[in-house]
Image (cartoon, rainbow, N blue to C red; front, top):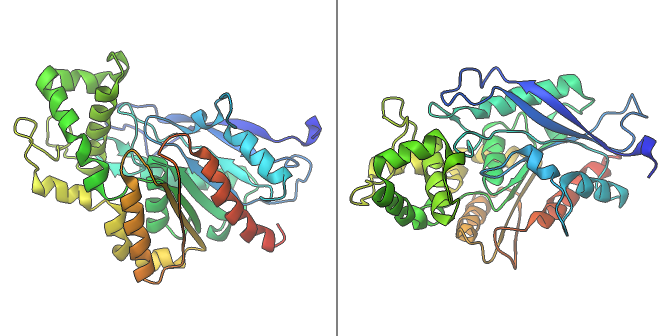
Length: 340
């Protein structure tokens, strides 16, 4: 491929009105990589489908461009699929919805900020700046892990924006996804107390070592900020368990469950049925037990007669970006059938 027709990535500096004055003081201006396909600059009248690719917890869109040994980054993956004819030329947007705590679950939260609104305003900005096909039939959203969670929940709530969705091992069935790590949160409290928790939240980067206890604790604190925010609580959110006794707090846990995709299927069944394409997958050996949430999601979608593609594969939670090929090819086939 000659340099004049190669793909390129533009690093947009997007200032978000939704994130202005967010409670953590996180930046409201975010670096948003935008992948432009081969030929974009040579065909000024052509418009393109657009794919929003959401990063997982503790990450952001920039990370999808990292240079790893033995693995393609997202630009290389899209280049290959387009060159092979498996995907028509597309624009891809890599948002940054990270927070000081690691992530936002792409939700609006009084403890974190308005990250759902942030993604929606980003869609408007991208359509205004680039030659997209600005309709849900040509606008996809996808991601892995918390990115998969964000993709499916945003598509449920906003089918007028996103008509295609791919959820790769997204967070589901919170009883098995999160509760197994509750003892680690309790252990952190036992070792460090409330003072240690406040210090961790004030500056996670300063905490050492960044071991399994660190990640499990910060993840559960961040999920509490996303699922059970409380502006009147000291930390800005409620914990789903008593840190002294380990007892579950049913009223808080109910607020978490209200965000669980397996419970949202019935609430948003009409929106889900309206989607042009819905894809879910999960590894058989997923370390966060997400397989069982994926199976329940599949069963509920089937019970409601909602068209979707569901796949399981031999693998765990990590190192599975190669699965993006599957959903991208299926979306690509739909667009290619239109002659794009």
